[in-house]
Length: 260
Image 1 (tube, helix red, strand yellow):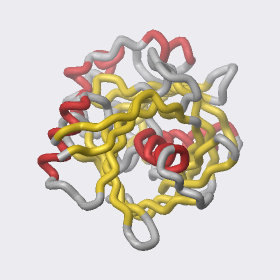
Image 2: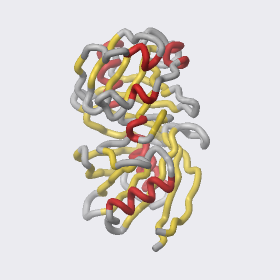
Image 3: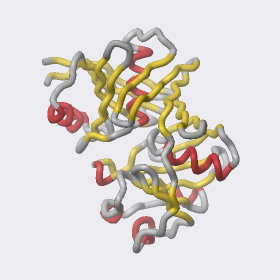
């Protein structure tokens, strides 16, 4: 069986930056183990699969190791495929997912994801936290699935060399490191070694936690952020209460077919 596949760089308008995701349209769901095998073969941080229904689309996301509940950059990539390659003519897409209904809209060349905001709870620092980063953060918060460490400066975030084995011991899908910035409202990095992703280039879902935090901290409902991984990416942010809007560009790197 042959399937169409697209590789899209998300949260960038230039290939070889942002976060690459594979997107595989399906007529009907494949067995979960087959989708997991495809994601493992792609060896990208996420592969998105989607199936159309009468009025919307159902979407699922897989890392090379596991299925996840929510992924921002692969949802942006899937929306880019629908808008730019599959002749989707409406201005809004509705995805059904493990995280509920996700609305996506296109405004000019910017794609906006409407995601549920994550709750925030300040927690005690994990034991031996200095081992994780070589520097002690100023704050630690727990969200829906991730732990977020706040640092003093953008330079702290740039210089982090995390102990990935230590991060695997923490009770979280992923670890966010963040600080305020000068050129942008805030910067971040994201590590998810337990999911098979040592460092994710740009993480839309992490901003369900970052946006509520920085919105309160900075007193702003609209912000521009940068994830300062090696590839890097720009994220446009809106805090709208119980939900957040995460905006970004996308660029097509590859289209093709795979054999399953």
